[in-house]
Length: 379
Image 1: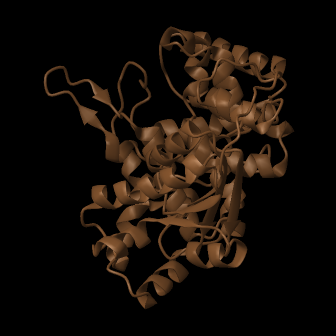
Image 2 (image 1 turned 180 degrees about the vertical axis):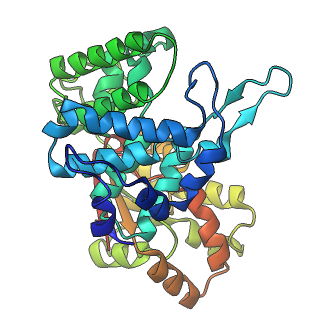
């Protein structure tokens, strides 16, 4: 299976989907046939029935026919896989029998990322699909986000830096049309208002413009600011934060591009402390962070070289850097699985290939809004 084969799963307007080919491409979807859903919000039945209905609703939408071929391929695969993780996240209340699938969007994005990575889907297309899966329900409730203290404008602006809003709205509409639920028109109206807000913000088909990168970073981190008016930037270190699975080439990249800069590294910290990978990680982190603070206090440039694989892992580092007014460039590196395991097997490391592959379940690619600049270097 490869990208050329997968993209052919997306029918041209007026054609019918080949669901047998879809199941052959993504065997995990077979489990959807036996995965129940909440009968109130999904009276149509199991997850596979819903998935087929969503795909058929998508193909019937004028927006799908008007989309570019690349958009059709991406939104079709996102629709096909949007509930791929419901089979592994289903929870049934032992008392009431209520069915839920908490976290299925995030888990589905991870499942899809691994499958599409192994199929060598181009990075940009793969991540467009995975990001859509992760946020596919947000348009249902985006205009109600103020109840949680998040203005709808913030939600739309942030999403525009992650996905194509028009394509996301198309997927969300298909998700509602592809089910039997109470008052679907109410949700469809909310999705249309979501579209209108994005158009008003000038980010329906592009990221919301900001006065500068510093204002954007501060705004998305909660600063009282307006995208059109620049915030004052205090001087601080210029920091390059590496991200990527072990053996993806981070050390080589740093040595090639920034040999003159100091490096903060968990591997160096382990070596200095005489610890093996996975042992006393808290002590390793404290050692590395103290080295980073020394450089930040002096305003010196440096590289922070670590996996920074999950959003949570990166956030801890970024919180520290932004506290000291650093200007951050995130550099993400990636290799195919076969090459990654080959490289790791040849390294002098205590991290086995088996352990490395368990790290895939925390594999979240840096989003463009996380830093002043995000660079993706993918083999």
